[in-house]
Amino acid sequence: METDKSLVELTADRLIKYIIDNHLEAGEQLPNEYDLTRLLNVGRSTVREAVRSLSSRNILEVHQGAGTFLAGKALGIAEDPLGFTFIQDKKKLTLDLLDIRLAIEPRMAAKASQEATAEEIAELRVLLDETEALILGGQDQRQKDIELHVKIAQISRNLVVPNLIPIIQQAISYYLDVENQALRDETLKTHRLIVDAIGNHDAVKAMDAMTLHVLYFMNILRGE
Amino acid sequence: METDKSLVELTADRLIKYIIDNHLEAGEQLPNEYDLTRLLNVGRSTVREAVRSLSSRNILEVHQGAGTFLAGKALGIAEDPLGFTFIQDKKKLTLDLLDIRLAIEPRMAAKASQEATAEEIAELRVLLDETEALILGGQDQRQKDIELHVKIAQISRNLVVPNLIPIIQQAISYYLDVENQALRDETLKTHRLIVDAIGNHDAVKAMDAMTLHVLYFMNILRGE
Image 1 (cartoon, helix red, strand yellow):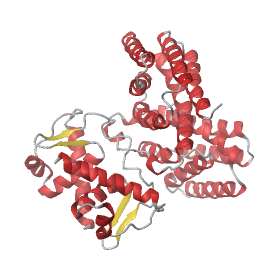
Image 2: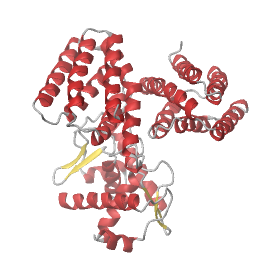
Image 3: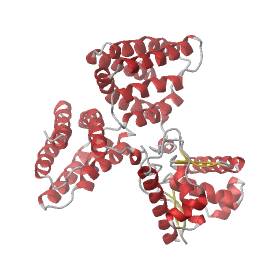
Image 4: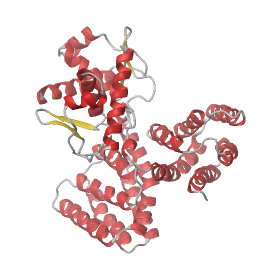
Protein backbone atom coordinates (compact mmCIF):
# COMPACT_ATOMS: atom_id res chain seq x y z
CA MET A 1 0.00 0.00 0.00
CA GLU A 2 2.94 2.34 0.70
CA THR A 3 4.04 1.91 -2.93
CA ASP A 4 0.53 2.79 -4.12
CA LYS A 5 0.61 5.94 -2.04
CA SER A 6 3.91 7.03 -3.54
CA LEU A 7 2.62 6.48 -7.06
CA VAL A 8 -0.38 8.69 -6.26
CA GLU A 9 1.90 11.38 -4.84
CA LEU A 10 4.20 11.11 -7.84
CA THR A 11 1.21 11.39 -10.15
CA ALA A 12 -0.04 14.44 -8.23
CA ASP A 13 3.39 16.06 -8.60
CA ARG A 14 3.41 15.36 -12.34
CA LEU A 15 -0.08 16.79 -12.65
CA ILE A 16 1.15 19.99 -10.95
CA LYS A 17 4.08 20.10 -13.36
CA TYR A 18 1.66 19.68 -16.28
CA ILE A 19 -0.44 22.59 -14.99
CA ILE A 20 2.58 24.87 -14.60
CA ASP A 21 4.28 23.88 -17.86
CA ASN A 22 1.08 24.45 -19.82
CA HIS A 23 0.39 27.76 -18.06
CA LEU A 24 -3.15 26.74 -17.11
CA GLU A 25 -5.04 29.64 -15.57
CA ALA A 26 -7.15 29.57 -12.40
CA GLY A 27 -10.56 28.14 -13.28
CA GLU A 28 -9.37 26.51 -16.52
CA GLN A 29 -10.48 22.97 -17.42
CA LEU A 30 -8.09 20.00 -17.38
CA PRO A 31 -8.05 17.15 -19.91
CA ASN A 32 -10.61 14.43 -19.15
CA GLU A 33 -9.78 11.36 -17.06
CA TYR A 34 -9.02 9.17 -20.05
CA ASP A 35 -6.58 11.71 -21.51
CA LEU A 36 -4.95 12.16 -18.09
CA THR A 37 -4.30 8.42 -17.75
CA ARG A 38 -2.48 8.49 -21.09
CA LEU A 39 -0.69 11.76 -20.35
CA LEU A 40 0.56 10.57 -16.95
CA ASN A 41 0.88 6.91 -17.98
CA VAL A 42 -0.97 5.55 -14.92
CA GLY A 43 -4.29 3.79 -14.31
CA ARG A 44 -7.66 5.42 -13.76
CA SER A 45 -7.78 4.82 -10.04
CA THR A 46 -4.35 6.43 -9.59
CA VAL A 47 -5.47 9.48 -11.58
CA ARG A 48 -8.60 9.69 -9.45
CA GLU A 49 -6.64 9.47 -6.21
CA ALA A 50 -4.19 12.11 -7.39
CA VAL A 51 -7.02 14.44 -8.44
CA ARG A 52 -8.70 13.88 -5.07
CA SER A 53 -5.50 14.70 -3.21
CA LEU A 54 -5.04 17.91 -5.23
CA SER A 55 -8.68 18.82 -4.65
CA SER A 56 -8.15 18.71 -0.91
CA ARG A 57 -5.22 21.11 -1.36
CA ASN A 58 -7.54 23.42 -3.33
CA ILE A 59 -5.48 22.99 -6.46
CA LEU A 60 -8.20 21.18 -8.44
CA GLU A 61 -11.99 21.27 -8.36
CA VAL A 62 -14.11 18.37 -9.62
CA HIS A 63 -17.47 19.54 -10.95
CA GLN A 64 -19.65 16.46 -11.33
CA GLY A 65 -20.70 15.97 -14.93
CA ALA A 66 -18.58 18.90 -16.15
CA GLY A 67 -15.03 17.76 -15.49
CA THR A 68 -11.93 18.73 -13.52
CA PHE A 69 -10.82 22.36 -13.28
CA LEU A 70 -7.95 24.30 -11.83
CA ALA A 71 -9.30 25.96 -8.67
CA GLY A 72 -10.67 29.42 -9.40
CA LYS A 73 -10.12 31.05 -5.99
CA ALA A 74 -7.23 30.83 -3.51
CA LEU A 75 -5.42 28.42 -5.84
CA GLY A 76 -3.28 25.95 -3.90
CA ILE A 77 -4.22 27.36 -0.51
CA ALA A 78 -5.43 24.54 1.69
CA GLU A 79 -8.35 24.79 4.08
CA ASP A 80 -7.11 26.12 7.42
CA PRO A 81 -3.54 26.06 6.11
CA LEU A 82 -1.90 27.09 9.38
CA GLY A 83 -3.73 24.58 11.58
CA PHE A 84 -5.84 27.05 13.62
CA THR A 85 -8.37 24.26 14.19
CA PHE A 86 -6.10 22.77 16.81
CA ILE A 87 -5.40 25.98 18.71
CA GLN A 88 -7.87 25.87 21.57
CA ASP A 89 -7.55 29.34 23.12
CA LYS A 90 -9.35 31.38 20.46
CA LYS A 91 -8.94 34.74 22.22
CA LYS A 92 -5.17 34.27 22.49
CA LEU A 93 -5.14 33.05 18.87
CA THR A 94 -6.93 36.23 17.76
CA LEU A 95 -4.50 38.48 19.66
CA ASP A 96 -1.53 36.59 18.23
CA LEU A 97 -2.94 36.94 14.72
CA LEU A 98 -3.36 40.67 15.29
CA ASP A 99 0.27 40.74 16.47
CA ILE A 100 1.30 39.20 13.13
CA ARG A 101 -0.78 41.79 11.27
CA LEU A 102 0.89 44.52 13.35
CA ALA A 103 4.28 43.20 12.24
CA ILE A 104 3.44 42.79 8.55
CA GLU A 105 0.76 45.24 7.43
CA PRO A 106 2.29 48.64 8.28
CA ARG A 107 5.35 47.69 6.21
CA MET A 108 3.09 46.55 3.35
CA ALA A 109 1.10 49.81 3.52
CA ALA A 110 4.37 51.78 3.29
CA LYS A 111 5.47 49.74 0.27
CA ALA A 112 2.02 50.10 -1.31
CA SER A 113 2.28 53.88 -1.00
CA GLN A 114 5.49 53.75 -3.05
CA GLU A 115 4.18 51.37 -5.71
CA ALA A 116 0.55 52.35 -6.21
CA THR A 117 -0.49 53.39 -9.73
CA ALA A 118 -3.30 55.90 -10.29
CA GLU A 119 -5.56 53.03 -11.34
CA GLU A 120 -4.80 51.07 -8.18
CA ILE A 121 -5.48 54.10 -5.99
CA ALA A 122 -8.85 54.46 -7.71
CA GLU A 123 -9.59 50.77 -7.04
CA LEU A 124 -8.65 51.23 -3.38
CA ARG A 125 -11.02 54.18 -3.12
CA VAL A 126 -13.88 52.09 -4.52
CA LEU A 127 -13.21 49.37 -1.92
CA LEU A 128 -12.99 52.02 0.79
CA ASP A 129 -16.34 53.52 -0.24
CA GLU A 130 -17.99 50.09 -0.42
CA THR A 131 -16.70 49.14 3.04
CA GLU A 132 -17.91 52.47 4.45
CA ALA A 133 -21.35 52.06 2.88
CA LEU A 134 -21.71 48.63 4.50
CA ILE A 135 -20.65 49.94 7.91
CA LEU A 136 -22.92 53.00 7.69
CA GLY A 137 -25.78 50.79 6.51
CA GLY A 138 -25.31 48.54 9.55
CA GLN A 139 -24.34 45.58 7.34
CA ASP A 140 -21.54 43.04 7.70
CA GLN A 141 -18.45 44.59 6.13
CA ARG A 142 -15.99 41.81 6.88
CA GLN A 143 -15.54 40.34 3.39
CA LYS A 144 -15.15 43.79 1.85
CA ASP A 145 -12.73 44.72 4.63
CA ILE A 146 -10.55 41.70 3.76
CA GLU A 147 -10.68 42.67 0.08
CA LEU A 148 -9.40 46.15 0.96
CA HIS A 149 -6.45 44.76 2.94
CA VAL A 150 -5.66 42.17 0.25
CA LYS A 151 -5.66 44.94 -2.36
CA ILE A 152 -3.13 46.92 -0.30
CA ALA A 153 -0.98 43.78 -0.01
CA GLN A 154 -1.19 43.26 -3.77
CA ILE A 155 -0.12 46.85 -4.39
CA SER A 156 2.89 46.29 -2.10
CA ARG A 157 4.04 43.74 -4.77
CA ASN A 158 4.78 41.10 -2.12
CA LEU A 159 3.70 37.77 -3.68
CA VAL A 160 2.88 35.99 -0.42
CA VAL A 161 1.13 38.52 1.83
CA PRO A 162 -2.02 38.64 -0.35
CA ASN A 163 -2.36 34.88 0.30
CA LEU A 164 -1.66 35.23 4.00
CA ILE A 165 -4.02 38.09 4.88
CA PRO A 166 -7.35 36.36 4.13
CA ILE A 167 -6.27 33.36 6.23
CA ILE A 168 -5.38 35.58 9.18
CA GLN A 169 -8.24 38.05 8.86
CA GLN A 170 -10.89 35.35 8.38
CA ALA A 171 -9.81 33.73 11.64
CA ILE A 172 -9.78 37.07 13.45
CA SER A 173 -13.25 37.94 12.21
CA TYR A 174 -14.70 34.79 13.79
CA TYR A 175 -13.82 36.16 17.18
CA LEU A 176 -14.11 39.94 16.94
CA ASP A 177 -17.50 41.42 17.68
CA VAL A 178 -18.49 42.94 14.37
CA GLU A 179 -21.34 44.81 16.09
CA ASN A 180 -18.89 46.71 18.30
CA GLN A 181 -19.63 50.39 17.60
CA ALA A 182 -16.19 51.69 18.63
CA LEU A 183 -14.62 49.21 16.24
CA ARG A 184 -16.89 50.26 13.39
CA ASP A 185 -16.20 53.97 14.02
CA GLU A 186 -12.48 53.36 14.18
CA THR A 187 -12.51 51.29 10.97
CA LEU A 188 -14.23 54.18 9.16
CA LYS A 189 -11.59 56.63 10.35
CA THR A 190 -8.37 54.63 9.99
CA HIS A 191 -9.26 52.97 6.67
CA ARG A 192 -9.64 56.46 5.21
CA LEU A 193 -6.33 57.56 6.74
CA ILE A 194 -4.58 54.52 5.23
CA VAL A 195 -6.05 54.95 1.75
CA ASP A 196 -5.40 58.71 1.73
CA ALA A 197 -1.76 58.17 2.71
CA ILE A 198 -1.29 55.53 0.00
CA GLY A 199 -3.01 57.87 -2.48
CA ASN A 200 -0.55 60.64 -1.51
CA HIS A 201 2.42 58.22 -1.77
CA ASP A 202 3.25 59.05 1.85
CA ALA A 203 5.02 55.94 3.15
CA VAL A 204 5.41 57.02 6.78
CA LYS A 205 1.80 58.14 7.12
CA ALA A 206 0.57 54.91 5.50
CA MET A 207 2.67 52.88 7.93
CA ASP A 208 1.48 54.90 10.93
CA ALA A 209 -2.18 54.74 9.90
CA MET A 210 -2.02 50.96 9.47
CA THR A 211 -0.28 50.62 12.85
CA LEU A 212 -3.05 52.68 14.44
CA HIS A 213 -5.70 50.56 12.73
CA VAL A 214 -4.34 47.23 13.97
CA LEU A 215 -3.44 48.51 17.46
CA TYR A 216 -6.97 49.80 17.90
CA PHE A 217 -8.34 46.32 17.22
CA MET A 218 -5.87 44.80 19.69
CA ASN A 219 -6.80 47.28 22.40
CA ILE A 220 -10.52 46.68 21.98
CA LEU A 221 -9.99 42.92 22.15
CA ARG A 222 -7.87 43.28 25.28
CA GLY A 223 -10.65 45.44 26.77
CA GLU A 224 -8.29 48.42 27.05
CA MET B 1 -22.48 13.26 -5.84
CA GLU B 2 -22.52 16.77 -4.32
CA THR B 3 -24.48 15.37 -1.36
CA ASP B 4 -21.91 12.60 -0.92
CA LYS B 5 -19.15 15.16 -0.84
CA SER B 6 -20.95 17.14 1.84
CA LEU B 7 -21.42 14.03 3.95
CA VAL B 8 -17.70 13.32 3.74
CA GLU B 9 -16.89 16.91 4.71
CA LEU B 10 -19.42 16.79 7.54
CA THR B 11 -17.88 13.53 8.73
CA ALA B 12 -14.39 15.05 8.56
CA ASP B 13 -15.61 17.99 10.66
CA ARG B 14 -17.14 15.64 13.23
CA LEU B 15 -13.92 13.65 13.34
CA ILE B 16 -12.01 16.87 14.07
CA LYS B 17 -14.52 17.68 16.83
CA TYR B 18 -14.02 14.19 18.26
CA ILE B 19 -10.24 14.71 18.29
CA ILE B 20 -10.52 18.08 20.04
CA ASP B 21 -13.22 17.03 22.53
CA ASN B 22 -11.22 13.96 23.53
CA HIS B 23 -7.98 15.92 23.80
CA LEU B 24 -6.12 13.49 21.53
CA GLU B 25 -2.42 14.31 21.42
CA ALA B 26 -0.22 14.52 18.32
CA GLY B 27 0.77 10.98 17.31
CA GLU B 28 -2.04 9.31 19.29
CA GLN B 29 -4.05 6.46 17.75
CA LEU B 30 -7.69 6.84 16.73
CA PRO B 31 -10.41 4.20 17.15
CA ASN B 32 -10.45 1.60 14.37
CA GLU B 33 -12.57 1.96 11.26
CA TYR B 34 -15.45 -0.13 12.60
CA ASP B 35 -15.66 1.94 15.80
CA LEU B 36 -15.47 5.16 13.78
CA THR B 37 -18.45 4.12 11.61
CA ARG B 38 -20.50 3.61 14.78
CA LEU B 39 -19.18 6.75 16.47
CA LEU B 40 -19.89 8.97 13.47
CA ASN B 41 -22.95 7.02 12.33
CA VAL B 42 -21.87 6.76 8.68
CA GLY B 43 -20.77 3.97 6.36
CA ARG B 44 -17.27 2.61 5.94
CA SER B 45 -16.60 4.29 2.61
CA THR B 46 -17.58 7.68 4.06
CA VAL B 47 -15.24 7.17 7.02
CA ARG B 48 -12.45 6.20 4.64
CA GLU B 49 -13.01 9.28 2.47
CA ALA B 50 -13.08 11.54 5.51
CA VAL B 51 -9.87 10.00 6.86
CA ARG B 52 -8.26 10.41 3.46
CA SER B 53 -9.26 14.05 3.27
CA LEU B 54 -7.86 14.71 6.77
CA SER B 55 -4.67 12.85 5.84
CA SER B 56 -4.05 15.22 2.97
CA ARG B 57 -4.42 18.13 5.42
CA ASN B 58 -1.82 16.43 7.62
CA ILE B 59 -4.33 15.99 10.43
CA LEU B 60 -4.36 12.18 10.28
CA GLU B 61 -1.79 9.59 9.26
CA VAL B 62 -2.78 6.10 8.10
CA HIS B 63 -0.11 3.53 8.91
CA GLN B 64 -0.95 0.41 6.92
CA GLY B 65 -1.60 -2.53 9.22
CA ALA B 66 -1.26 -0.40 12.36
CA GLY B 67 -4.23 1.96 12.15
CA THR B 68 -5.03 5.66 11.97
CA PHE B 69 -3.13 8.20 14.07
CA LEU B 70 -3.25 11.89 14.76
CA ALA B 71 -0.33 13.42 12.80
CA GLY B 72 2.81 13.63 14.91
CA LYS B 73 4.49 16.60 13.24
CA ALA B 74 3.10 19.88 11.88
CA LEU B 75 -0.41 18.82 12.90
CA GLY B 76 -3.02 20.26 10.56
CA ILE B 77 -0.49 21.93 8.29
CA ALA B 78 -0.86 20.67 4.73
CA GLU B 79 1.89 20.35 2.17
CA ASP B 80 2.68 23.76 0.65
CA PRO B 81 -0.27 25.32 2.48
CA LEU B 82 0.23 28.82 1.07
CA GLY B 83 0.38 27.78 -2.58
CA PHE B 84 4.04 28.63 -3.30
CA THR B 85 4.00 25.94 -6.02
CA PHE B 86 2.11 28.32 -8.27
CA ILE B 87 4.37 31.33 -7.77
CA GLN B 88 6.68 31.12 -10.77
CA ASP B 89 9.34 33.71 -9.95
CA LYS B 90 11.23 31.83 -7.22
CA LYS B 91 13.81 34.55 -6.62
CA LYS B 92 11.12 37.17 -6.06
CA LEU B 93 9.24 34.65 -3.88
CA THR B 94 12.34 34.11 -1.75
CA LEU B 95 12.92 37.86 -1.31
CA ASP B 96 9.25 38.39 -0.41
CA LEU B 97 9.43 35.58 2.15
CA LEU B 98 12.53 37.20 3.66
CA ASP B 99 10.59 40.46 3.77
CA ILE B 100 7.90 38.71 5.83
CA ARG B 101 10.57 37.28 8.13
CA LEU B 102 12.03 40.79 8.47
CA ALA B 103 8.64 42.06 9.55
CA ILE B 104 7.83 39.25 12.00
CA GLU B 105 10.98 37.73 13.48
CA PRO B 106 12.70 40.73 15.14
CA ARG B 107 9.48 41.39 17.08
CA MET B 108 9.31 37.70 18.08
CA ALA B 109 12.96 37.75 19.19
CA ALA B 110 12.21 40.79 21.37
CA LYS B 111 9.21 39.05 22.92
CA ALA B 112 11.23 35.86 23.40
CA SER B 113 13.86 37.82 25.33
CA GLN B 114 11.15 38.93 27.74
CA GLU B 115 9.52 35.52 28.15
CA ALA B 116 12.41 33.04 28.08
CA THR B 117 12.82 30.79 31.12
CA ALA B 118 16.27 29.51 32.19
CA GLU B 119 15.34 26.10 30.77
CA GLU B 120 14.33 27.58 27.42
CA ILE B 121 17.57 29.57 27.19
CA ALA B 122 19.50 26.34 27.81
CA GLU B 123 17.50 24.63 25.03
CA LEU B 124 18.25 27.52 22.67
CA ARG B 125 21.96 27.21 23.45
CA VAL B 126 21.89 23.50 22.58
CA LEU B 127 20.24 24.26 19.22
CA LEU B 128 22.77 27.04 18.62
CA ASP B 129 25.71 24.70 19.32
CA GLU B 130 24.23 21.97 17.11
CA THR B 131 23.70 24.41 14.24
CA GLU B 132 27.26 25.73 14.64
CA ALA B 133 28.71 22.21 14.67
CA LEU B 134 26.93 21.40 11.41
CA ILE B 135 28.16 24.60 9.75
CA LEU B 136 31.73 24.15 10.97
CA GLY B 137 31.65 20.50 9.87
CA GLY B 138 30.59 21.58 6.38
CA GLN B 139 27.23 19.81 6.74
CA ASP B 140 23.72 20.94 5.83
CA GLN B 141 22.42 22.96 8.79
CA ARG B 142 19.05 23.95 7.33
CA GLN B 143 16.75 21.72 9.39
CA LYS B 144 18.54 22.61 12.63
CA ASP B 145 18.43 26.27 11.64
CA ILE B 146 14.64 26.07 11.24
CA GLU B 147 14.38 24.36 14.65
CA LEU B 148 16.30 27.25 16.25
CA HIS B 149 14.00 29.86 14.74
CA VAL B 150 10.89 27.85 15.63
CA LYS B 151 12.14 27.58 19.21
CA ILE B 152 12.53 31.38 19.41
CA ALA B 153 8.99 31.75 18.04
CA GLN B 154 7.69 29.30 20.64
CA ILE B 155 9.42 31.25 23.42
CA SER B 156 7.74 34.43 22.14
CA ARG B 157 4.42 32.72 23.16
CA ASN B 158 2.81 33.58 19.82
CA LEU B 159 0.68 30.54 18.91
CA VAL B 160 0.83 31.00 15.13
CA VAL B 161 4.38 32.06 14.27
CA PRO B 162 5.89 28.65 15.18
CA ASN B 163 3.59 27.15 12.47
CA LEU B 164 4.39 29.86 9.96
CA ILE B 165 8.20 29.87 10.20
CA PRO B 166 8.86 26.33 8.89
CA ILE B 167 6.62 26.98 5.88
CA ILE B 168 8.47 30.20 5.06
CA GLN B 169 11.97 29.01 5.89
CA GLN B 170 11.62 25.71 4.02
CA ALA B 171 10.67 27.60 0.88
CA ILE B 172 13.55 30.04 1.31
CA SER B 173 16.05 27.22 1.80
CA TYR B 174 15.16 25.72 -1.59
CA TYR B 175 16.51 28.81 -3.25
CA LEU B 176 19.33 30.10 -1.06
CA ASP B 177 22.77 28.70 -1.76
CA VAL B 178 23.57 26.80 1.41
CA GLU B 179 27.20 26.48 0.31
CA ASN B 180 27.64 30.28 0.30
CA GLN B 181 30.55 30.90 2.67
CA ALA B 182 29.57 34.50 3.54
CA LEU B 183 26.13 33.25 4.49
CA ARG B 184 27.51 30.47 6.69
CA ASP B 185 29.92 32.88 8.44
CA GLU B 186 27.15 35.39 8.99
CA THR B 187 24.80 32.73 10.36
CA LEU B 188 27.45 31.70 12.91
CA LYS B 189 27.84 35.31 14.06
CA THR B 190 24.26 36.57 14.14
CA HIS B 191 22.71 33.38 15.57
CA ARG B 192 25.04 33.78 18.54
CA LEU B 193 24.15 37.48 18.87
CA ILE B 194 20.43 36.61 18.86
CA VAL B 195 20.70 33.81 21.43
CA ASP B 196 22.98 35.86 23.71
CA ALA B 197 20.55 38.79 23.65
CA ILE B 198 17.58 36.51 24.45
CA GLY B 199 19.67 34.89 27.21
CA ASN B 200 20.35 38.37 28.66
CA HIS B 201 16.66 39.33 28.36
CA ASP B 202 17.74 42.27 26.20
CA ALA B 203 14.74 42.95 23.95
CA VAL B 204 16.27 45.70 21.82
CA LYS B 205 19.48 43.77 21.16
CA ALA B 206 17.49 40.62 20.30
CA MET B 207 15.38 42.61 17.85
CA ASP B 208 18.43 44.27 16.29
CA ALA B 209 20.37 41.01 15.99
CA MET B 210 17.43 39.29 14.27
CA THR B 211 17.02 42.27 11.93
CA LEU B 212 20.71 42.04 11.04
CA HIS B 213 20.42 38.28 10.46
CA VAL B 214 17.50 38.53 8.03
CA LEU B 215 18.82 41.65 6.25
CA TYR B 216 22.11 39.91 5.65
CA PHE B 217 20.30 37.08 3.86
CA MET B 218 18.33 39.58 1.77
CA ASN B 219 21.47 41.46 0.77
CA ILE B 220 23.29 38.29 -0.27
CA LEU B 221 20.30 37.20 -2.34
CA ARG B 222 20.10 40.60 -3.99
CA GLY B 223 23.83 40.35 -4.71
CA GLU B 224 24.54 43.47 -2.65
